[in-house]
Image (cartoon, rainbow, N blue to C red):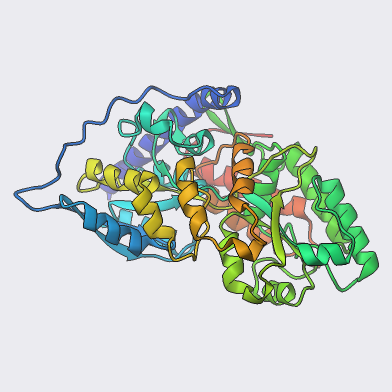
Length: 456
């Protein structure tokens, strides 16, 4: 019993030390990101061996993922790499699905070598001590291939813990035919978006621009990100948490007003009811991410040629976006070969044949962190659905318009608390109170881990 207490105390001490180190160095990283300069130490050249054959046999790796096309990508990798063999296991997406499975596996010492993790949850895996430090493998020449904003999301305390894959940049999907019917203009600002909603309500009260917005934490994070919010920052050796900051309250106030004025559908987002309303033409825009472009083809095939994609409206009309989704490849600290795993992760993000194998089914539309790979991905999205529009040009503008952002190490707690509270938004509940619930859950979780916290 005493040994267990000592072990637990030691783990908490290591966790506090790690988080304190992250807190102490993240402020400098944020300043570097804002100024456009690089962050963290210069990584040394990779010392991966030229071959991973062991006694004439390939190094065996395990890979878990929820991303579309993973099996096809691994088949291509295995076909072209004779010294590394990868076994793929599909896991469900979401915090209560695949991530729970991953955390439990790591606790049991049976986690995969490589897995994909969405950016908000990467710090959580790092804080648990599950991930290998990949700094030595992300060399300066490799960094040049990635959109800088994605590298910032995989860098903590000056160390790299993931190889970026895709970015779920937000865009506006809109029914071009119904915009013409109701005399609406494609909004460049949120004020124009509201004006369109008012005009639409006057023309036909049964038709709405959007489903309920403000009823989930992920969407609120993405919209707040676009507005210039900073939910997490650091002061000395403390995390500073300010989820309901001024830009976020501005966003919350806008959508609360839209709800209170009946300018959005009362239908909760991400539900079958929303799909039915979109199919019937009762909801005519979606605030969603780049990955949704392929989903539209699958969900609403009869509406081909009726939808187009525009930059997300911003507060001042200048290009700006936040992210809803997107992930990186992470490698377990206990991997059988971190070097071989780094080869796999890098290949999946930077190799043309690997990307082609993953996206060739046409069932995904990822906006990739490696710009050169988007030319390949775009070939497999049926652009006739969007009247021949170059949708990747829109994605790219939004990707380059991403503002600096830092995720905290307890986003599972934050999102769970926010979603519970925001579930009442369509029934008279308050968006701001939902955000405040996320603030409290985050602060409580950090303090329970022995981490110093200040609040906004």
